[in-house]
Image (tube, rainbow, N blue to C red; front, side, top):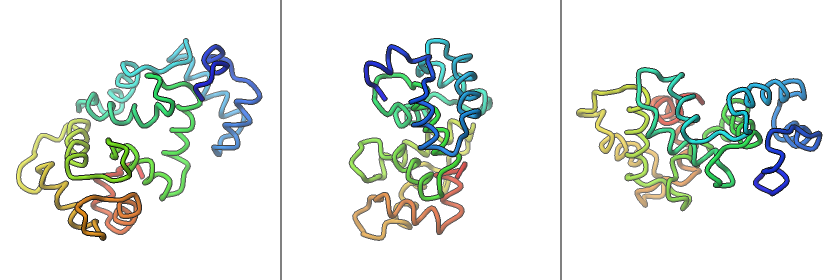
Length: 190
């Protein structure tokens, strides 16, 4: 992803692309071609930009504000950091969030939450993400136990095995697997 050949032929689905996508997803060639046709219908130039990404999310969450959450999700899916999501990045992200093992899907959620890319989620990062998730879902009651900062502190306190007031990827995955309430909050589609 991100090489010159890919950029110039971004709307073309080659045999090499199909082979790579089949090897990295559970989709058949027919399914890959169907996803590709739908992707090109929405993104004729073969690139999904941030604006279109937000529009798509808003369709799924019409009662909420998708912009804040989408900023984090977009950065995660834009694997080559070129400011757009090409078909390969799109399908691999879809597959990771829908076909991967529980650990893989929670790992992807962790990567989205690790805003600083330092391999840890701290309270500030978690607070930002919880706030963005509340915005996305239209949650306006943020008092008491639902305060994003308090909730982030409580989650880190509960899941932080090492005691460094941060969550490693292993702590995050283990904590989400062992606590259905936290998993529902931090990884609702997993």
